[in-house]
Length: 63
Image (cartoon, rainbow, N blue to C red; front, top):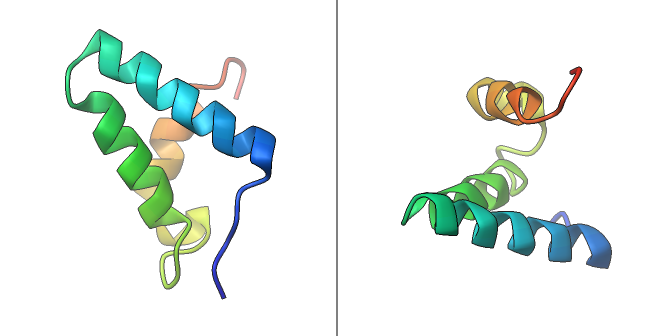
């Protein structure tokens, strides 16, 4: 089973990756690749990717 992003979430992911890329060359590409890797089997779910979950939580104010 392959996880598919909601169309609006797909746009947000691409936009965030572009923003990261402007801040630090290569970061946006790595960010998007990690999100996609974390959401593809067998690594689906944040429980299987605790390091990514920690990074994602750090990006959310109040999380």
